[in-house]
Image (cartoon, rainbow, N blue to C red; front, top):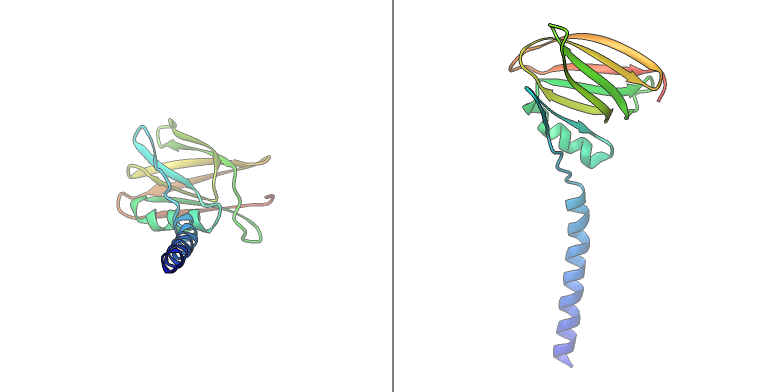
Length: 141
């Protein structure tokens, strides 16, 4: 009987350990960077796990774009393109998350973004070793 009790106890401890480990692993979301020509980027930020994972990798990128509504709540599913100084489109991103980080060569860029029917254009200068933040505030969410 003692052996059976020990087995039940071991199973209970094992199940409890898995029960505590799964939420911990689920909270750590690894975002995979996308490489497109000379640009590397990552996007997402839906949910606390993705938001924290992206923020943890922010130091690897020199352009940050955040999308929010007028009340300050994150928005997602924005579409945008980033153009170089010469007018060539470097990347086009569909359904971007509320957070977008890119590693670009230093230079001047134009960001053309659209959320629903709303459009905006931003000119930015990106340095090689310094982060440039662009905050897009949308009327609609």
